[in-house]
Amino acid sequence: MPDQQRAALATLPDNERATEWKDRYRYLRPLPLLMPAIIFLLIPLFMVLDHRGLQNITELFCWTGPVVLYLIFPVLDWLIGRDTDSPPDDAVARLEASRFYRWTVWAFVPLQLAAVIAGAFLFVSTDLTFFGFQGSLSTPAKLGVAISMGIVGGLGINIGHELAHRNDGFERWLAKAAFAPTCYGHFPVAHNRGHHIRVATPEDPSSARLGEPFWRFLPRTVSGSFRAAWSLEASRMARLGRPTWHLSNEVITSWVASVAFWTVPLLLFGPQLLPFIAIQALSGIALLESVNYIEHYGLLRQRTSRGNYVRCAPEHSWNSDYLATNFLLLNLQRHSDHHANPTLRYQALRSSLSAPQLPSGYALMMLIAWFPPVWRKVMDDKVIEHYGGDVQRANLDPRRRVTNS
Image (cartoon, rainbow, N blue to C red; front, side, top):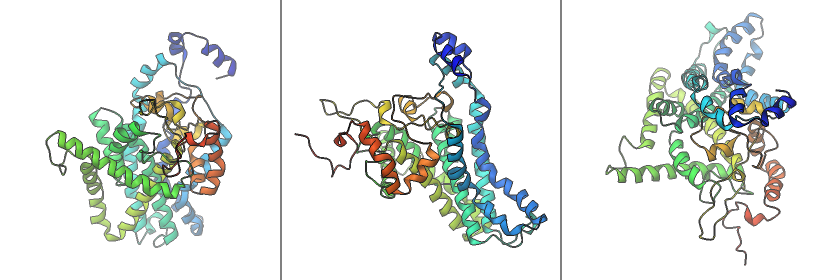
């Protein structure tokens, strides 16, 4: 949309804007489906390369997942840039009602599960001759397949996050399926009923503190989220007059879903599949928690005169309007609007220019987060600047916080 047309549209009343406003990127929203499809593209690629006598480079393509996410998408973000165009309020209901956007989310889950099974087959197979590859994959290639499937699982967690915010029974069932491969199904409980309440406070294990390296945050958030989910479900079971170890406990049902998903592949492929299960699960969890680390790093909700935390506002989430990664992550980078309206579907999330802005999209920021000195050089000054130079207003480790007299 040309700048002049966008400016003219912004001057219209909301009811007229809703009639005029259209999602310019509607047909790019299914882009996330390409990631689980990658594994199915490897097989014909193996055949073509073998036919051309290039089998020696075939295994490089087993690393397609991390290359696409951590190299290609940051470049796309840089080339395409940002877009802050947002639906007006009166267009939200129409967007929410459109099933086109839901089909993308729904289609991802079966494609994800099929891709993980295909990846498992490539990992354990000792004879890939039928697919144009002699023998089995080398150990580095198997590692690439497992990590690539972990990235698919991490994107599946994001899909599950979108679905778990819905009240529809079918979508919540799909969410459980999306979490099953990575064995991280307790996440919706900890996220919906824990993180959304305690976000940007020292009590939230999913809100990173200023100066906290990612590799210290990772075990804290993984263990803290699990404990929070178990505690929340134990309390819910008690209110219902049921024992904690009950099949209606959401944490337990998530374990059942993971066991159900992996039982048949383990029976078919044997215990040699266990390293694949572990690697892809850890890779997917690391992707998710890298995003969690970025989203609220150093940001803190202040306390009122009564000692309560102020209501969560746009200033308590880092936002990014880089377009390519927003396509891939279902507008997750418009995180302030998600916290303000957690039941809003991804296609209706709006840009929040009043929120602190990241210097790049999540795809690059995740990579930077893994190198703490680089991360702190990029982000710590931004946090301090956000609080007008008063570091005590940031989310510091409670042991480092001083009491202002």
